[in-house]
Image (cartoon, rainbow, N blue to C red; front, side, top):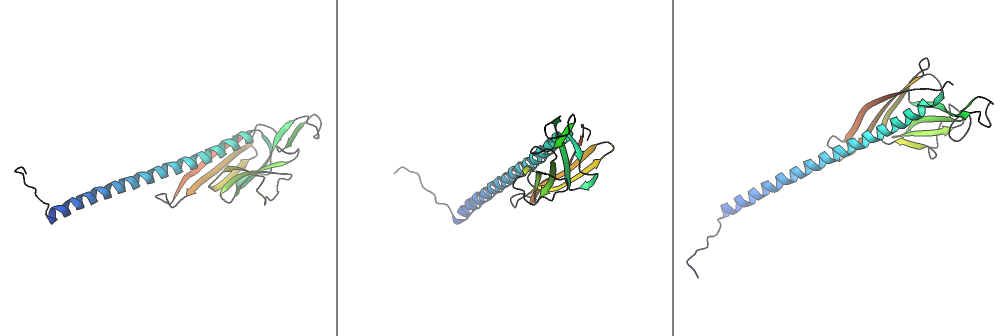
Length: 190
């Protein structure tokens, strides 16, 4: 053996190394958890923003081509309207614009909340109570509030939509858009 000596660690030195490694491991775990929560928050924010924007865009496009609104509305939670089916369409008044929904002449389109979903439904009457949503199209998930204002003199429809996604994984427990607002002016005379 060469003239070197091997020195053993004392108990105090060993405890100091284990403590330092524990501190570093805890700090790394905290950093990872914080980064993961931040990613979840950003993803949830994107989801609620996309849901709200997609719904508002679809409603605005369709409403601009509407002609008949069910009634004057102020802070209503439902909107009933008819869209133009075309001019001089078979089954309608000759030499006139025909109104209805996608499925039928004279039918109505409805925007309303179904639980946490904003839905687009069709029926044959303006005031139809929708109970079966299986044939309805979902415009947005996580819909917290949906309000509509319509001013008949200006033919202006204002939508207010709040989308809120709740999850125990989010730092605050939920992520929402706040209330988003958009307007559409009806182009077609009824």
